[in-house]
Image 1: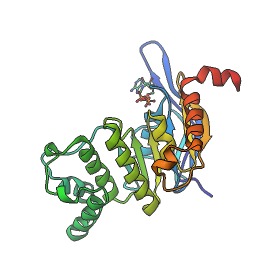
Image 2: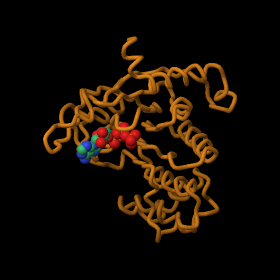
Image 3: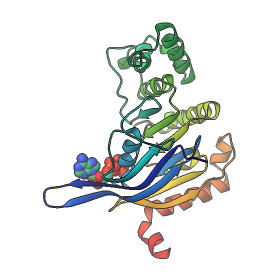
Length: 260
Ligand SMILES: Nc1ncnc2c1ncn2[C@@H]1O[C@H](COP(=O)(O)OP(=O)(O)OP(=O)(O)O)[C@@H](O)[C@H]1O
């Protein structure tokens, strides 16, 4: 089956003052249709660079990034992008922030309202649709940013540390909600995080562990955990086993490389 997203031998270099810096070094990776793929790795290993290429915000220096077998040439409504920063318009209400992407896509007003309403309900912000961002907590702002991406109904969600700035409890709540939505809508998700537990809990089949200097895929670790990913699953011996494997691959990269 054709992968939804395909990174083929991708290289990204930056020309610095007197040297060429390799941010990504021959990365090949396929994300299957409807997969929820998580990516972890140390700071600077190129996670955001990889995601930005799938989003069409950055071009590879060599190699190819394909979505549905077609080279990515720029951003598109088939791919929703969510960053750690909420990036909401402070002067617009939740509803108008969520409708914004649909306005740009010239979606007719009644459909726009209906889709925004649905996305807002989906992320649990129904009671705050007319609130301004400054009156919302960090978690609620991030829910709003997620609703805005959902409203456009992209087939692919590209999420770069979306819960990174949130407290542990809000983070777990948003993880649960994201998994529920994913199970209902079955989008393809590529999700970057620094948090090993988050990576394991959210991954449908695999966690990709990257290494730095140069940025590359270090290990791909299989995840075969049942749904729903309840507290029992998060506390199960199998979860702990996978978590330890990912942890080891992230934090003892030199040892695992030597051992391999
Ligand atoms: N415009 C640029 N010019 C030069 N180097 C860059 C540029 N953008 C990114 N880099 C370098 O490329 C490498 C990968 O950056 P990237 O942001 O993708 O890493 P990351 O894994 O997402 O890091 P973090 O987890 O800290 O967000 C880093 O070493 C970074 O300094």
